[in-house]
Length: 494
Picture 1 (spheres, helix red, strand yellow):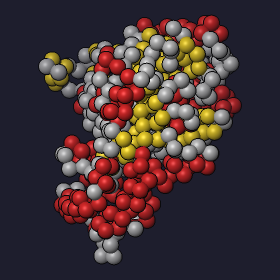
Picture 2 (tube, helix red, strand yellow):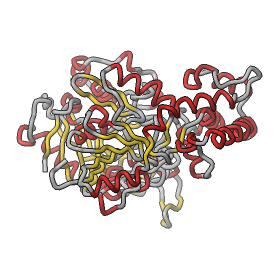
Picture 3 (cartoon, one colour):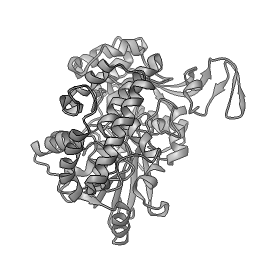
Picture 4 (cartoon, helix red, strand yellow):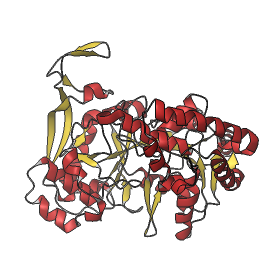
């Protein structure tokens, strides 16, 4: 963060997994406060710090900096079990305590029924599954929007909290069976999973055990409530005092509930505007928004992916346990001549497997059509991550336009015909599912190690040509480039 910038935001430009955690951690070194504004424990961030790999879900990425206050904002949905029993314990193992962690009292809590609903709703969708992480995020936001959610502040009034829990247990159980069509056997099986404490919240006759749930959450409340603050007031006073504030985004713009590939999206606003609603900061306070773009595209779970390299069926058999080494990928690149192989090389060099789930991420050529949307919605300032992952690639492509292959229809008030060319990103899976690359800008790969480059001038000319191509085709300004996983492997370009 520069001396002139008091408040900046860092968010994703595509489908998430762009490497935002590294940059929020880096900027946190010069920030007094880091605030996470939206999402939940479905959004994993990996931070490399002093040789330690930290996998975070709820906790902001500045937690590794002892002098930085980290805040879970009101725009998030918080799973106390994941925060307390996994994250805080894992952080303690690497000598990082969470004394510098604060939580908005208005944050909505993920409850046991939310994870059950997540699974039941996916089963009910059949072949049209959204591809959720089953962490209960969507159902928690559903309750929030329906004005029936449970907030952290509710734990301050145990009787009020208990009444809400009992009411929800009864209502949600009916919904699981009558609307989602789940069987009693499925319900019992799901309630016995580790994320439901192995059946601890299940009665002997197979129902939600409201009393057990109440006890668990009130115990967690003893740990969480001392960290509770009014984030709006806290940030207002911090801003007046000249404190430097970093706003941390989760997921990416193409997963935004309003601007993403609906319905294959998350349930919150992961665009720049989400920083305002998720923290209470007014617009005039934010000096700059950085969107993080990866040098190639990735996507987790279901949903259209126009520049995808390989099919979901091919990718699904891969796992992090069988990850190829860098040398194996380098050797494979010498004979690569099909989309799946190119995608596999990218996935295995970068370790593109979900931080939280371990699922293999789908990879693709850089999509300028999609990333133009990030420039439109979030602004032009870009941090380009994972550039070094392309070191072994013999060729590179940037998709500059789509061809619509579906039936004639109308979209956004205009006629859309088969074989029409699109240069603006369609934020609806009904249209995007029929979009294929119409034109590519082709680039020769530099095929040399750039991880020791410390400034723009050090980069090979072929690398610079690729960066200029990204700027030209998206309308962005690349402000910073990453050439490695560790914090020091970055440098400013402009």
